[in-house]
Length: 331
View 1 (tube, helix red, strand yellow):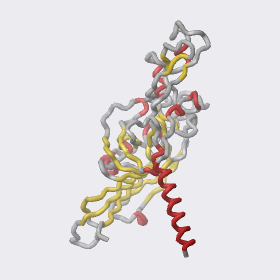
View 2 (spheres, one colour):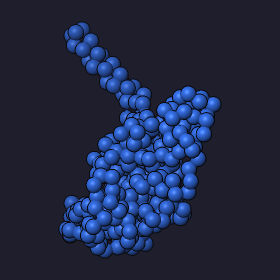
View 3 (tube, helix red, strand yellow):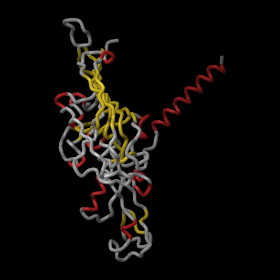
View 4 (cartoon, helix red, strand yellow):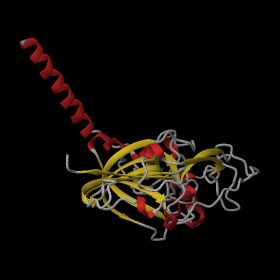
């Protein structure tokens, strides 16, 4: 009996150790976002000209893993919303149909390794274009949220902390080119830049599915006539392949692909198992003319751009799967 109890205690301690390990999971080093280290982002030098800054949006996003590729395996994360905002404009218009809806999420300890060292606020931002993400699915401050989608570095905000040239150490630099003429007239021809670090932030951009879990509110959870509201936990789930520029394969400089999307005509009161769905095959690429430039990965400017229907506006509920579930907080 004593040996059995000891075995149970050991298993319990092991579980606690694993949980503690998850809680202490280190964020991803944001320096790995740069092309110099195999990532997909291209930082500018310390004194960039206007046209030099085009690399900050070409590409504007790159996967954390295999950053030189466009496609990435979706991840799923869980957390609590600390704040959010809808379409406030300001996002780069060439890569956005509309500005992004942003959720600022403190991740659960088990998902803390999905942050990067550049996430100074300790939050993972969920960013999904407002035109593709209906307002009823948005989470509010204090809500729990689960998201699945593209795990990327935000290439448009390098957050560089300059280093110094290897010989002329009084000269600050971000790239090796900062230590060569004409940028550095006093540098020798073979100097490199040492000690630079970057603050690229990790994001879920775009999500492909979110579940906003709201507690402490009232809802009618019975189908009986005259039922009264009771305290309940409500989950609003939205799933869609539409993502705007961040999800357009063609805008990410590769050949357009086709995808399968599901649309739902179900009302919120129906059970998800009885939801009426229709299956359609359509392209998700909606780039503007001139965005199909030949890419570093071998994309072709001659690729034919397929035409896709514009997603329904947020006011009409979007074009993805809609599901709403209420659970009474009473037993």
